[in-house]
Image (tube, rainbow, N blue to C red):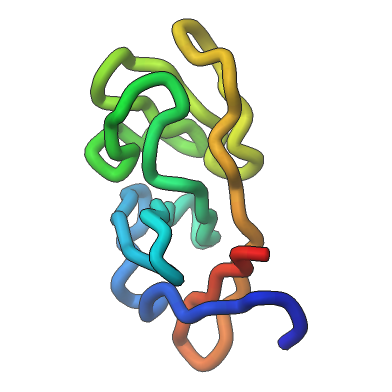
Length: 104
């Protein structure tokens, strides 16, 4: 694997239609299970100091628990007020039952 791929979690540790927070390479990362796919973003909201893994996942949207702003977990795009900045999204790869995140 080229890039900066770091093991984040086992595939089985990420529940379907839910989000977990993990530490990957010293970064706080949120891993989302949506419709059989896994997505990864930074775990801290760009608007307030809240962990997205404590928010509500609805399809491909994670709602921040602090001010109810929503991000698209596929791209990190800010979808509504009060958010103005996207959250960083990361490529993921699944191999051998493990989820890897590219932090490059």
